[in-house]
Length: 59
Image 1 (cartoon, one colour):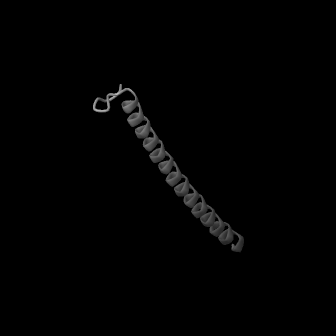
Image 2: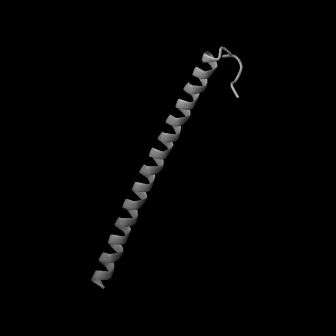
Image 3: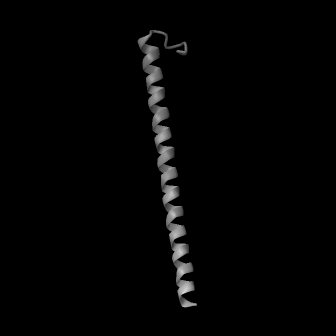
């Protein structure tokens, strides 16, 4: 019985650790997406200035 209780406690600890790791990865993914969007916005602004039509969106 003792081994079963320890096994269950270990499983709960493992589950909590996996959940924390998943949340960390999700935050990192969100940060990468936000950085990518920022880079694309900078690229878009550069292309608009480079092509001389900053007031019109570049297709």
